[in-house]
Image (tube, rainbow, N blue to C red):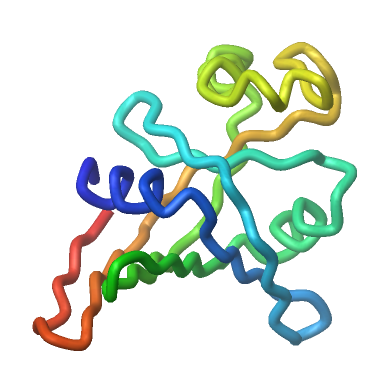
Length: 130
């Protein structure tokens, strides 16, 4: 888990894929947090990505750095606890201009039932169950 978190965190930007009307939707994300031994992402409930996850919580993340890339696929589960939201916003204080752990828009979601696979052009893939 920590290895996956550190790789995504070091990449800075990763790409999150969701489904809308049976079509993939991909967009850049930059929030990743390790809270209570779970990986979390953050978005707003008013955004299309959140609405897509509500309808179908299957996702895939992909990120790349220095000739290696990581793919993580599984389910995203909403965690409405203030503690989880606060942990994310404390890690990314710049988000506080748009989000607050007490507002009705902030959403944090943890990664569940996931498989993470590290790839490179020179090494065999390495898979981790999360």
